[in-house]
Structures are given as C-alpha cells and as structure tokens.
Length: 410
Image 1: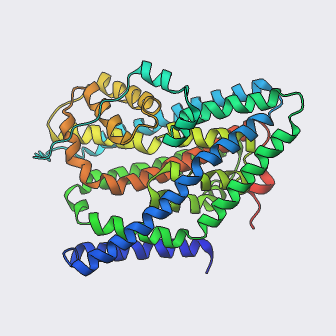
Image 2: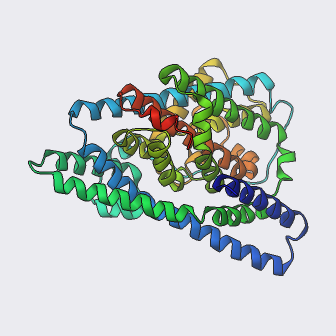
C-alpha cells in the first residue's frame, strides 16, 4: 500500500468511525473514553508538526536569504509574493460574492438564533505594523509570531550574507535546515495514525447532521472553494509558467490531505516547504520565503468564506447590500487577510470586521458557526494550494524553477 493510499484510507476510516460515534454512541461512557484517547494522540501529532514550524522556517529562510547574491532579488521576490497574494485573495472574495448573489442562498431563510457571538477586537493598523518587527526574537519564536520570525530570519540572513567569510556559517544553517527536514520526514511516517485519530475526534463531535440545517450555505461554499482551488489556480499556473496543473495537484495531494486533516496552514507548513522544494522544483530561496509568508497572510479560502457568509447573513436578516457595500467587502476582506495575520480565530475576526464595515449584525456569525469547523478543513486545503502555486509562479519568474523535478514521475 502506497503512502498516499494509507493517508486516504486513514482519512475515510476516521471520518466514518467518528460519524458513527456521533450518531449512535455519543452518550456511551466507554466509547467516550476511547475518543479521549484518540483526541490525545491527534493532539500529540499536531504538536509534533507545530514543533518543527519555527526552527524549519528560521533555518530555511536564513539559508535562502544568505545564498541570494543579488540584493534586488530578495526585494523582487517579496513584492511579487505580496502582490500575488492580494490578487488571488481579491479574486476569491469576488467569486464568492458573485455566486452567493446569483443563487440567493439566504433568501427567505429568516433564521433566528439565540446564540450570541462576540468577536475579539481586531488589532489596529498601527499595532499591526509595529508588531511585525520583533523586540525579542526568542519570545517571538516561543509565541509562534510568524511575521516577526520571518522579519528576524531575513535580518539574520542578510547579516550572514554580508560577512566577509560566510561559508562556514552558511553551511551551519544548511545543515540545520537539512536536519529539520529529516525530522519532518520521520514525523510524517506517523501521519496515517495521527490523521485517523484527529478525524475520529472531530467527527465524533460535529457529525454530518448539522450540514442539513445549512445545506445551501455549506454546499455553495464548498463549490466556490473547489472552483477557486482548482480552476483559478490552474489558470494562473498554466498561463504564467506553462506547468501542467494535473501534475501540480498530483504532487501536492499529500499536502492537501494534511491541510484538510489538521485545519492549519502552519502545522502543514513543514510538509508544504518540503514538497515545494523536492517535488515541485521551487528554488530554496523562493520556497523558504513565500511558503511561510503565505501560510501567515494568504487566506483565499477564508476570504471565500467572508463573501459567502456576508451575503448569506445579509439575506437571512433581510438586509440589502449596495454595490458600494460589495466593493467594501472585497477591500476589507483582502486587507484583513494581512492585517489579522497570526491572530487566534482569524477567520471569525475577519468576518466580524467585514460585517461591521457594511453594517450587518455581527451576531449573525452564530448562524454559521456550527459548520465552520468542517468548512475550515476545506479552506485550509485551498490556502496551501495557493501558497504552493504562487511559490511556483515566483520561482519561474526568477528563472530558478527546476522543471525537471516538477515533471519527474518518481
């Protein structure tokens, strides 16, 4: 049995067992005990992945920057990455608004909820800009502040590159990067077990029955995620690089399964970095910068949720939005993907910001929060596809994409 088959089998087995527990054995004490056991194993697996994120990003980014001989190249990579992330996020939210209005998913629903939702206050623009720069890099690493880690790694990389004799220092970081990748490989060997435990725990709690209450919202959001994640990304990939989309998704399938199971771009990042470099042929200097940055600020899947949820909530409450409101949704959701980077509960904070901006009741989030956990798994899969696609685009534009690795069928 191939590794991919093991991952797929563990996914379906976990979803099936968890759903059966939710339907038939939810009140059974013995079953609940075993579910707790699965929950512990799943949490350990996620913790093991997250353990590697900070050291891998640090070593990878320092190595990549130190090996860039042209200073303007780093600026070019940074500018291209941020612009592409903003463009794809704008397209994502636009698609979501178009299809949501076309199908009128919330029209006549008239949902009323007794559940209250209080969104955490989003940081101000001043706080966002100041917090990008770390005052204590050790604390930033301990807290997992990814933007601060990226900035610190860039500074260290530039410092290493400026040393008159930097060969031994660069070799140290290269060795550290290789060590981190090797540890990631070891952790990934246990992925089928970890994924099975995670999905049993998740689906024993949420089940599938909740989907029936919000079927229109749920299935439209899934369709828009699929359209953006497959067709939009395929167009960008083929138009700008000439690479075959089928091969791209074939080589990315394990990353997609990981993202779906963990619901975390950060937890999936070690595998995304390794796949981009070793299977997609993305240059080390590009992958080490674009993948961590994308996992932090590229939220196309979340942006799609903003659009669909905004229209659904407005129609459910019978509130009409004007053209200027829709334009404001696009602008707010796109900028919020960067402005709320690294904030816990980022998806719901972004949605609260969008709803407040166009005068919709924030408590409307309670209407959709029940299915958000399941949809978050799909959104994360779209996000990691976008990170990898943009890494390929930038590497190709810098003329360092190794196409022989991309087309290698081994």
